[in-house]
Each structure stands twice: as structure tokens, then as C-alpha cells.
Image (cartoon, rainbow, N blue to C red; front, side, top):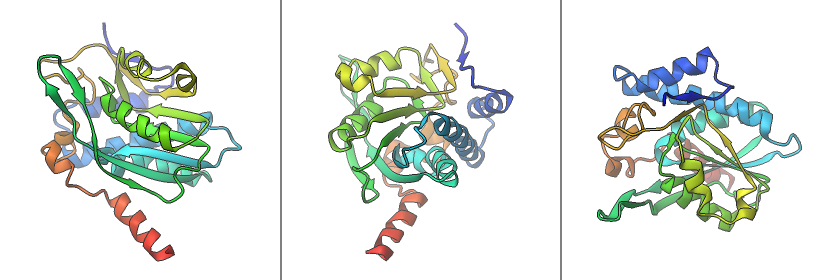
Length: 233
């Protein structure tokens, strides 16, 4: 089965998705495309978030924060929303190759002050395939943040990922989930990456080379917000 595009996908978004999967797209342009897709997701979120809700927490993985995450945040903040940022550094691995189960424990995290007291929670990921990273980060935040709306946003997801994710949570929590994405794929290539997905290994496409190097990286958006917090305090 071929890639399925959501009804909201226009020629502009489709072109951005094509650039992600193009192997000729270099890291700098790839990051710019992720930022642009973040803008588009931000516009969708503006239509979905209750107009009376102005306190929002956005949770990102470290590799997505400066690009996809910032793209969303910029649109929301330009439209009067206050967005508190959370960033997780996850180490994804298989503890037992025989059962093929993947885990993604959090090894480091950053939170803007006040992130627990929000109306709306947004979880973002460049792509959702087996959902282990999203599940880990969402589980932690659900324990800490008592928000009514929970949006799970990604440019691309693998068919079945939503069912896998929802199978890990109680029905009362699942009822609060709302998904935003542009494309759904239904197969993986021989290397285990969704095909066409986002063009392979997002760490390498963004220039991080490996997961370990990604986990030593501090996003610029985190540096700026840490600095601002220090000035306030």
C-alpha cells in the first residue's frame, strides 16, 4: 500500500515531505524543512486548541527541539499562546534481541518553570513508528501534568503506531489524545526505518552522526531558555 496523506496536506506540505526523503537533502536544509513542517503543525494546532486555553506545554526529544519543536512554538507564540518547553534525552535500545522489544529510558531532561500547570500538553516527534519514545515521555508527563488536552504530533507515522501507543494507557487517558500528522506509511526497509518515512535515520539526517552524539547535544532553544530563567531568578 502506498503512502496515505491526510486531507490537510497541500502541495507545499507534500513538497516538504518529499525533501525529507530525498537523499540529496543536506543536513542544514533537512533541519530547515523540519522547522517548516513544525510551522505547519503549529497552524493545525491553533485550529485545535481551545481558544480559552493559553497555557501550553510542548515536549520534544532533543533532536527535534531546535527544528520541529521550534517551528511549532514560533507559530503558537506569534499567535498569543504561552508555550513552556520540555526536552527529553532518550537512549533507545533493545535490552534483549530475542524478543525484539525496544525501550527508550530518559537519561536527561529540561523543563521550563511552571510546565506542570498547563491546560494543554503537546508531545512531538519527527516520526512515530514503534512509539516507544513517545510512550516513555508521555508516561512521565501524564504523571506530572494535569492537562485536559493531549496532542501527539509528528510529520509522519507508521500504520499501527497509534494502536500500539494507546494499548499502553487506560481508556480514560486515551480519550484525551488527539493526533496530528501529514503522512502515514505502512512498511519498513531492510534497515528497520519507515519507508519512505522521513528519509532514514533522523540523527544522521540532522547531522548528529549517532545516538550517543545526539545525547551530548544541548539544543539552542534550551540554552536560550535556561539563560532567561537565570535572568528572572
